[in-house]
Image (cartoon, rainbow, N blue to C red; front, side, top):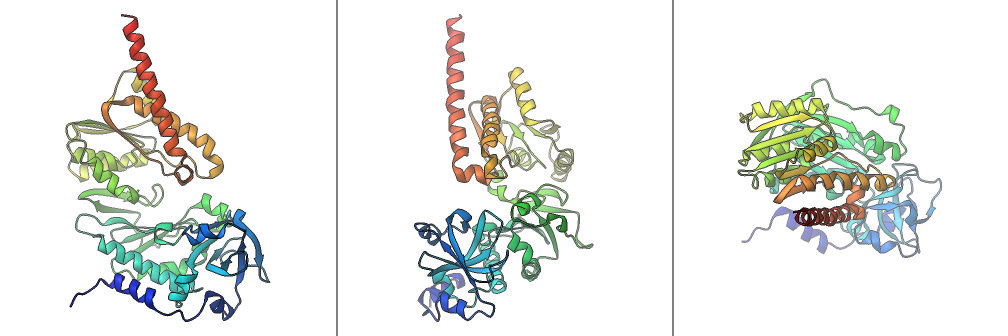
Length: 418
């Protein structure tokens, strides 16, 4: 008899199960009552189609007394006040509600409807099973992202796993409210022995929280440093480092770099602890230079060279501002076969987009000019506001056109002066 995967069987059973109660009926039976966030006309379909965050400008009115408080469960309803889903409310943030379930999900799986604890348990378990199906963790990789915020339908929650250590990055008020429940779910994962909690202070300010009461929580038994493997390359990770301590979301990009650097010279800008640089050397690069402004990060990078027994004659790191370095390299007429540009978040908020686009434009213009003809430029942005607005690609396209024109103009000028 054909055995279907358990996740598929679960999906099939949910889709064919008869609805036991509507979300409206479930809310009516709720012990404390549930307020409704009613959407403006024409805004409903966006959220039915899967957009997970209800922004304040889409809200027409809030029905319910007393009014909901930040972190409360609320219904999200259309103009006729018919529920389309439920989520977690914020009275201050531009994201008024973070949707957790749509109507059809809640009626098909009522055990999770309006029940944050149960939903957390199920979503974290599903995320764990999904990573297992992708071969994570494995003998060659024990550093990976377990919870990817909206990607795992837990908006505002990031969990990176480094061996037996889980680092939680909290960027939403509801995550702070349900901290105990989240930690309890993570603790159930057999390979996890330590949990480090890292609130994202600037983002939580936007959520209306009193950040003076927030602090990173690391139990006395939690290590400050740990060693991990990613695609067979070893890294030292410091919990005093940026974000969760390591950019686990760049794993596949680092692996890609290892496949295109054989025999090439590589420049790694904003290299942090040397992830791309190490992969370039492992992939056969003849000369790799990493640039960063953080001395602690570069000290980790140097440790990683020794940890992987790499030839120090082929890889080096320099403490310098990326823009200053690129300008001086251009004056020296230097260029590289492969250039990697992975700057820190330049647009933490939408209001910073205009200034950030100028910074991205300047950085990428310099990086393009340092890339040899026929070479490869890998450029990255961790500013969600830039990528979601479409401005990042437009900025790159504009700079590419200008750089092509500059090269053509300079070439024509040189020929005419001969």
